[in-house]
Picture 1 (cartoon, rainbow, N blue to C red):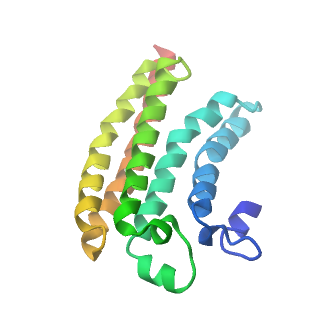
Picture 2 (cartoon, helix red, strand yellow; picture 1 turned 45 degrees about the vertical axis):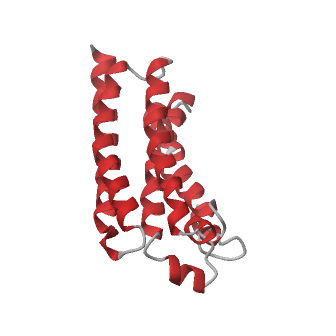
Length: 174
C-alpha cells in the first residue's frame, strides 16, 4: 500500500526519481503480486513464487518504461526525472531492451535450474511481440508513432504470463 501511495505522493514521489518508479511498479506487480497470490492460495510464502514473478515484474516495468517516451518533454518540464529524462530518449531505448531481455532470460534461467518446468519455456514465444516493439521503439522513439510499441509491450506481458501459467500447470501435471 505504501509503495503505491508514495509512487506519486510526497515526500518520496518515487515516480519522479530516476528509475525508482519503474522499480516500484515492477516489484509490486511482479514478484510481490505473484508471491502474494501464492501465499493466499497455499498459506505458505514460497520463494519460488517470488522468483517466477521476476519476469512478470520486468515486463510490467517495460510497459511503464515505453509509455514514458512520449512524455519526455512534459516530464522534463515538470521535474519528473524518469530514466527517459535522465538519459534522453535515444540512449534510454537500451533500458527497454534490457528489461525485455532480462524478462526472457530469467524465464530460461528458472527453467534450466528447475524452479519452473521446461514446458514453461513456451512463454518465450511471446518474445515475438517484444522484438516488434523494440523495432518500433528504435524507429519512432521520439514520435507519437511509437503507439504500436506500447500495445506490443502490453500484449507481450499478457501472452508471456498466460503461457508461463499454462506451461507451469501442464509441466507440473504431466
